[in-house]
Image (cartoon, rainbow, N blue to C red; front, side):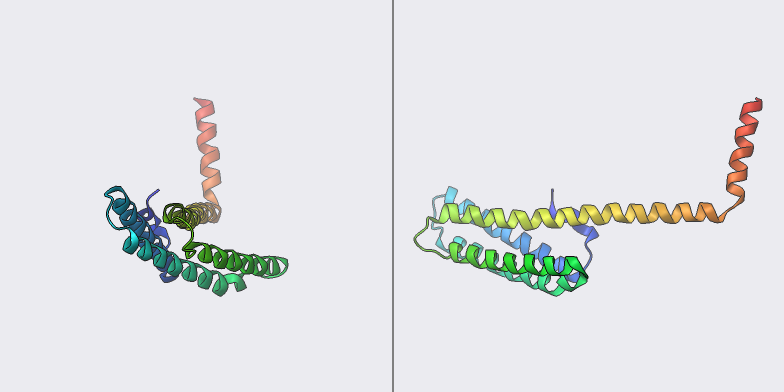
Length: 164
């Protein structure tokens, strides 16, 4: 899917995440182009890695800010999950900056992280889109219930068809 389809997520924080994912994707593309053209890959790799760090902090900030939305039993499990995710990202970033590792698999691992965030955003947009449809359907059905004659009219039409 294309991130441009995420127009449903019209919110500053979602926009920031979407823009960071786009930036990471573009920088990964530049790195891969440099690799294919056999030019110096150091700068594109460093820029890609930097965009991964920025995306990571953006995601962790978003999660930390909104973990309070969950109340009750879910709240503690969400806080634990955010804490574990933060630890995983810290380990992941230390992996991204390990100079002993080859940069190609490191970049591929970084892009897998970007894809995970992208997929999460797309899934969120899909759910919100469906929720909006559900809300619309419920509202329409409410209006039908408000009109008491609608049911009577339907029954009259049905009887008329039976007679014919």
